[in-house]
Image 1 (cartoon, rainbow, N blue to C red):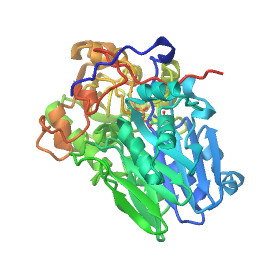
Image 2 (cartoon, rainbow, N blue to C red):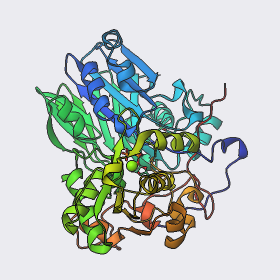
Image 3 (spheres, protein in one colour):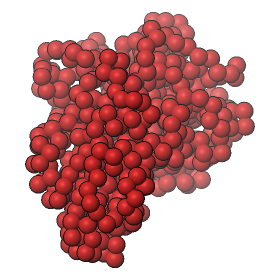
Length: 491
Ligand SMILES: O=P(O)(O)OC[C@H]1O[C@H](OP(=O)(O)OP(=O)(O)O)[C@H](O)[C@@H]1O
Ligand SMILES: NC(=O)CC[C@H](N)C(=O)O
Ligand SMILES: [Mg+2]
């Protein structure tokens, strides 16, 4: 797509260019007596999507109740006293992670506003690519922002809409925003779900004992024993009330383009995304990778956790035995999404250790799902050599990540992406492997069940690998788009 050229933003607004943007999980319940407890369980199942903070807002037909915390879901929302402060049959929740500068309570979602029409809470997975532009206009017009999150512009747009019905005001707000969003929102009487016009971020409808559930992933349905009903369509808004589920389609129809990185890394392997088992697809990525680039080796070693299914596929396709040559400490979370490079490096050392008995004297193939900055691979290759590996071959079950993400998941700057600044040979040298290979874009699409990428009408949002951004990037500047950067702690 063509990037919209916009005037350079003012310095006061360019607060945190060097930061990681986060991926989140959302969950909503309508009509269950234990709505908040179910939401806490759902958020626990979605913990992999964000570990910085969690929040729940409930509605008891009179008042809204909110609990927001920095930290993991289980650290706070397993406490019955916290749940008892969230009464009502309606509830929404959010998991979040971000950089240090943003690790502040006032950015923790769901965000809430008291509008003239009543209370309105919203939780957002994704990232808006024109939030900075909208926010400037809103602030100039007198809006007082309480958080520094892109999501807050949605509240202001809803508040300012002159339409009489809340749902029309919400839809009006959606027409203003660009980028990626899966939203769950709560009004006094309705649970609302919305997915951006391309369906970049996932949103699922489920059902438990006749009550309705919205969630980022199906694994959050499984934990509470709820049934999968369907994926929310791209550009669809669902309004759930005592009258049932009403579906609105306020945008012109267009082909869905879900984010392919959900399949590569973000989603939990037991989730079904767009009808596909994430586990099966990841295994198939390993199969395609083995077809494309198979070194002579004695053993296939996965880089836990996300590399495991691809390594199984690689092993099955190649006939080379699969062994757990790296043991993962289960008390350390994801490292790719830690806020600073220092913490990420520490995380990798704390997280993985070599299983010498499976490594020593062997030619090993390490299989990981993706390489972002190279932090993990450098450490792991050295660890394998220190454990006596004879040869270390590194295989990545997705193509080189050459472009930043502006839809909520990736590094802020291209310079931080190893593949954006290094050739294949330079990367091999950097990580210290005997050989290095990535799955091709064609192989990735074959693993997804297609003959290949349809370059005219691509099936997925895959800009990380192709540079093909599917939406306007209104907030970005010139040739090198910057990660949207709105958030700083002013106090
Ligand atoms: O090149 P890097 O910057 O090191 O990032 C890439 C690594 O980050 C991710 O793992 P992560 O540890 O986040 O999560 P996981 O436990 O789900 O694999 C991914 O699976 C790679 O292993
Ligand atoms: N990126 C996410 O999914 C989180 C939602 C939103 N962009 C935030 O910063 O809170
Ligand atoms: Mg990993």
